Image (cartoon, rainbow, N blue to C red; front, side):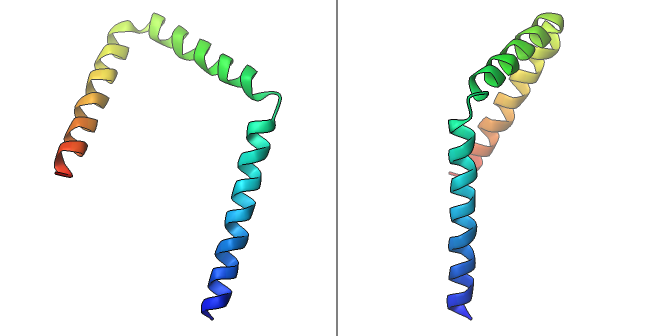
Length: 70
């Protein structure tokens, strides 16, 4: 049974690596990243106050999470 579990994990890992490799090799990826960047910039420009508050909140939460691990 343990060998069966290990084989299943290896197969799933190989599949995940292949999907990741295909994503990285995809020619469309740079265009999609650029579109995402442009959409984020547009959203920040339309809602600057909300963007600043969101950034501060995320930073605060991340700081609390990191500090709680100590």
